[in-house]
Image 1 (cartoon, rainbow, N blue to C red):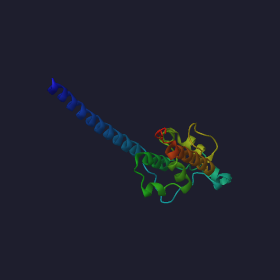
Image 2 (image 1 turned 90 degrees about the vertical axis):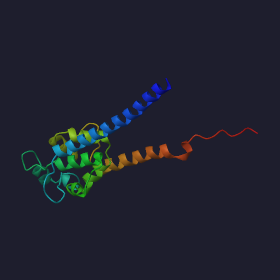
Image 3 (image 1 turned 120 degrees about the horizontal axis):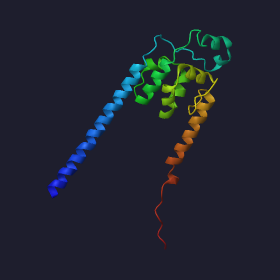
Image 4 (image 1 turned 45 degrees about the vertical axis):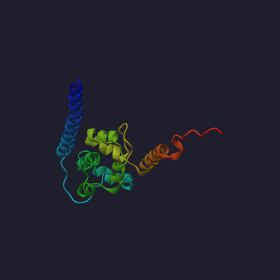
Length: 172
């Protein structure tokens, strides 16, 4: 009977590691598929997505309006997928401007999933602040800073030593 229980325990231990390895392999496969589906756009410098000070300039908005030489959103999607995947490279970062990189680096996985699922027009409009994608942080600097501050506040509540349980003091 002890051998039977030991054999069952050995099978269970090996099956957990087997399942974990298959999950990691599947995750890597999906991550590679996402970055393969979203091929990188060419070009060297960071393109202007109509975010920031240029947002008030009608020429910039008109130049990136539908049908008028649209800016490619693939570099943003590639970088977003790579950030989640942990595989962001300098070349990917160079394809987006600093403000967009700062915005992407503050998003959680759910928000990045919304970027990957949005159409180019929805994403472009969200980046310009013309309309929003529900559940996705606005791309302006004030929203990013407020989100980061709120996150740091929550984090500080979790790790503050005063929230640790204390041992009962002996009664004298």
